[in-house]
Image (cartoon, rainbow, N blue to C red; front, top):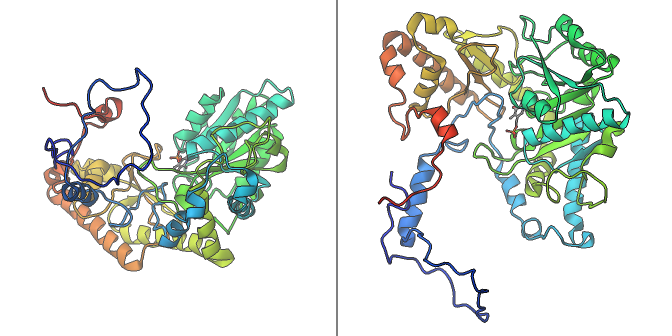
Length: 468
Ligand SMILES: *Cc1c(COP(=O)(O)O)cnc(C)c1O
């Protein structure tokens, strides 16, 4: 496919601007460019076709199944988008006086009321723009709490080995030393390992429950009790609340602060790095350290982002909450769990499941034996799925499972889609045994096959350079 710059023809254009109806003003001297910018020149029809072609080459939830574990790629109802597009929400100015944006303030306050109820927290801010940003904010609350008590000895944050990579990264960015603990063979926190590292230097624990292998830790009350007993606080990574929303509450599990990814669980499409919201909730005793919550611009409060954060993401979340209601939210969670268990049981006949027990909203396949046998890796299977119109599952995560594929079907997929997906996995399993070389070469249909991912991440080419 050609780049838009390669489609450009000098002098071609589409006139879309009306005549200027205000007086021209001269730019201050020195601000004018010496040369015209090198913008692509295209007719409207070619411009339209370019972006439509790009659209056809992208896989999203609207195109097909997207079982990307830990990421909750659920279908987001259109009505949430419609509400977020209302001019009363999109046309506001962040510096508008509070009296002029009362409706927006009510959106924030109502969303806060529902989400604190769902999580068992007392207060919440919508400032952080992503999950990782929310974690950073939440762990700063823990730091502020210990500092405010003059407790300078608490320098360590405990993180289980199955944690999302953002957890240890966050703890380190907040200036803490990260203490990793190994999980038990059943995928849960090893209580003895936890006890061994707890002490007067413990600032807190960061935990996901259900964890990243899709298992709800039955010892959760004992875990949070032990951390509190040692003087630490408990942070809940609630990026993905899909398995438990409306069913159990992190606050009741003993957690002191949490973040939610509104862009995973609560109806904002994501995946392209678009606007998100890592809402941070906390118990009352931490609320004084919370960044300003709603549209309030109180003096003295920490700010982690300008104004009210990504406000329209909160509008979508509130619409989702109001349309789902008190019955719909737990029903969605239960269906997410049901769908994951159904798909796991369907696939189990071929690939190995890492933890063969009832899972929550996601499960992990372990392809290490299969790879030994066939030479076909988790990466090969993931790449092969692309040819069948399925987005690959999360790969090589969590780190405690080798050759991991982590699937999260979400509640919005039908039984037909899950049956179709299971059939493809069986097909992959058989194909890998028959023709491993074909799998090593996959994908065969996609625009981009197997880029050098390290090079792409370290030296991304983000700018078109005119050929000499
Ligand atoms: C997605 C995710 C995060 C990070 O969220 P971002 O919005 O991508 O920063 C953190 N923890 C868990 C468990 C996640 O699934």
